[in-house]
Length: 161
Image (cartoon, rainbow, N blue to C red; front, side, top):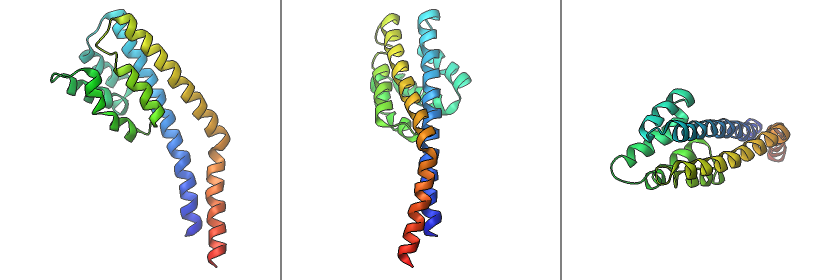
């Protein structure tokens, strides 16, 4: 039982890293769509949200959809996003990832397209670095987490005996 529970912890760590990897990739795609729509089509944020759901899926678009819903009742997109950062945490993002998205939300709908595009480009680059680092960590430590969990479980079982 001890071995199984410790192994499960290792497997859970590995799974959480893979979930975060998928979510980061989804937000990079979402930001790309937002930038393209703002720069090339001058699309309003409310219509962009529909595109995000169509192209990025409900999980990724949910944060943007909820943020826009809050913003549509009289607050700025940035202020509305603050109320929804908990969604990003539930999706599996860590504080550093959320900070990157906060910077984007602080300019959406407030500045001209060029400023918004510049901030989105910066955020995409930073998220891509996080994605690449996490992918390398999974490759190098993913099996390690599983093995450490099993080893700790065996050790604890031996100590208990």
